[in-house]
Image (cartoon, rainbow, N blue to C red; front, side, top):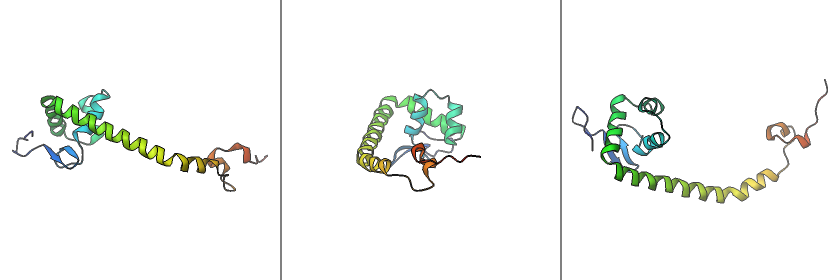
Amino acid sequence: MILASNGQSTIVRTERGLTISGTRITLYDVMDYLTAGYPSKLIREKLSLSDNQVDAALSYIDTHRAQVEAEYQEVLQIAEDSRQYWEERNREHFARLAAMPPKPGQEAIRGDSSHTNPKRI
């Protein structure tokens, strides 16, 4: 763990994984921005972190690169598995919804021009 100047851990392990102390932000959130090429200043702004918190996160990632990267890959795989599961589970439901005719007056909302009656001015 990385210690702040006051002697308290800045990076802690929670049930969510490696987390910035006092936040719900994980190092995997930081990794998302790092892998997308964001500079530390923009990561700080996007995640509403202090300079010290970002510095501690980046330092921890640099020091423990292999461990953090392995955990990050696991997090990405779990997210992808979850996305695929829900996409498959909802595929039939969304197909049924798309096949339903629009309720009267909602044609424009659904972008269904076949049922609209254009008004002449």
